[in-house]
Length: 202
Length: 438
Image (cartoon, rainbow over all chains, first blue to last red; front, top):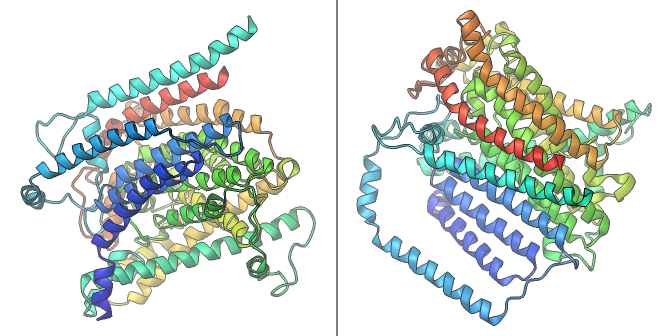
C-alpha cells in the first residue's frame, strides 16, 4: 500500500512535473519582480529546473552545461554587472505600458511557434523510433544502464565523426565557427578595454 | 550491498519489492547517508581548523567540551548558533537575504552525490560526473554574491564583488587543471578514473607524467582559492571588511555558509584525490589486491566485500582530509593577499601555467611514442589497466566504445578528443590575458 503510494508520488513523471512547474514559476517570477537581482534569482530557479529536465531526459552533458554556462556563468556576470553599474542600492526596472504590450506580443508569438511545433510532431511515431534504438553499452560497469552516457558520442560528433550513424555529417564546422566567434569577441573586448587606456595616456 | 543505487535497488528487488519501490528506497538511503557525510564533514573540519590554528599559534585550541581534545566543540557551537536570533537587516532584500545561505549549502551538498567514496560507492554514477560536479560547485558562488549584494551593507557588497571577480577568474584554471589528468584518463566518470589508478602509487595520475605532477599542485592552489580559503579569502577579509559577505548574518544562516565552505573544501580535495592521487587505492598492490579480491568475492561473504569498500572509503576520506588539513595549515601560515594580487596570481600566473600544462599533457604521449615507442611511462597503458580493474571487480560488461578496448585505441581517442578543447581553452585564455594586461 505504502509502496504503491510512494511509487505514484515519486515516479519520474512527478519529478518531470515538478521541474516543469518550477521552471515556469521561475519564468513568471522573472516577469513579475522588478528588482534586477531578484530577476536573476528567479532566472536561476527557471534555468536550474530546465537543467533538471535535461537530467531527467538522460542528457547529462547538456544539463551540466546548462548549469555551468547559464546559471554559474551568465547569471553571475549579470549580477556582477548590476553591482558594478548600479547607482542606487537595489536597481529596479519598471516597464512602461508600451513595453509591456510589445513584450507580451513577442511572448505570444513565441508561444504560438512552440505550440505549433509541438502539435505537429508525430509523437507515437517518435516514441516507436526511440524504442527501436538499442541503448549504447554501459560505461565500464559503474552504471547499470546507459543512462546519460552521451559524452563520447557528443565529443565525436563535435569533431565531425559519427560512429553511431555511418556517413552522417558531424558538427565540426559549427563548433569551429562558435570557437572563432568567441575568440573574436574576446579579442574585441580586449581591444576595447585597451583603446580607452591608450587615449588616457596620450 | 554497496552504496551504488543499483546495488541497493537490486538487493531490495531480491527481497520481493518492485524495482520502482526499491529504486526509491535506495535513493532515500543515499540521501540519508550523503547528508550524514555532508553534516559530519564540516563539524570535523571546524574542529580540526580550531585545533590546527591553536597549535600553529602555540595555543591549545579547544580543550573543554567533550574531553581533553574538545571533540564536541563543533556540536556545542552548533547548539549555540541554533539558539541565536535570526537577524535580517531592515534595508536588506529580505527574500534573497534569507535564500542565499541555502543556495551555498545546497550546491555543495549536491556535489557530494557525484563523489565516489570507494569502488562503486557513488550515489550518482554519471558518465560526465566530473563536469557535473564542477558545474554544481560553481553555483555556490551565486549564493555568496547574493548574500553580499542583498545584505544592504557596504562590507557585504565589497565581499560579494570580490568573490564574484575571484570566482569568475579562478574557474578557468580550475577546469584546465582538472583536464590535465583527464587527457591521460580519457574519461570523465570519476569512478572509472579512480579504478584506472590501481597498483603501485606510481600509477596514480599525479605520477603519470611531469605535467600531471605539476598540475596537481596548481589544481590544489586553485581549488583553495575556489573555496575562498586563505590566503585567497578576500571575500571575508576580517581586517578590512568586518566579515565580508556574511557580515549581516547571524545564527543558523551564518553557519550554513560555513557548512557549505567546509563541505566544498572536502569536495574539491576529494576530486583532487580521485583525479591525481589514486582515489580509494592505497597505492600498495598487495593491500589493494586483497581488497579487490574481497570486493570480487560474489559467492560467499558479502560482509567482507562490504568491509573492503568501507576500508576503501576510509582511504579516500583520509586523502581528502589530508588535503583539507593542508588548506587549514596554509590558512594559518600564510598572510592574506591583496585583491589585485589575487587576480594577478590567477590571470597572469596560474592561467598560463595551467594552459602550458594542458598543452604539455597533450604533447607528452606523442613525444614518448616518437622517442620510446610507448605512449606512456607506465608499465601498461591506461586502457589495459582499466580493463583489468573492471574484470577484477564486480563489473561484468566490457565497454566497446574504444576506451577500454586497448591501449592504442585509447591513445588515438585521446588525441582526437583533446585537440579541440586545447584550441578553445587557449583562445579563451589568450583573450583573458589580453583583457587583463590592458
